[in-house]
Image (cartoon, rainbow, N blue to C red; front, side, top):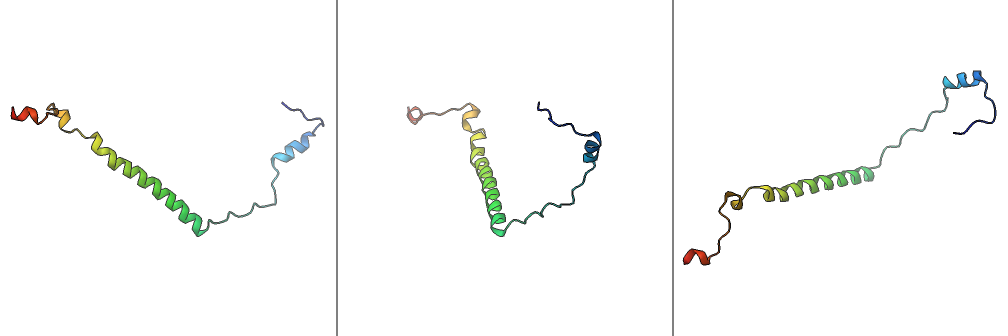
Length: 80
């Protein structure tokens, strides 16, 4: 750790704890319409991607005819 080279009086340290600045920070700027629109479009794109992946992935998760035990049969086995 670094040590101070000069001694600091105790009164100064105690006074620094209750020090309040009279300088107020600048007010936050409101985002412009283009920034709000851009953030909205990015959010909608992310949500649409999640919904789309869910819609395309659900058929793959469903139990189809292969899960019932029938399996696939060729047409040659039907007629002979």
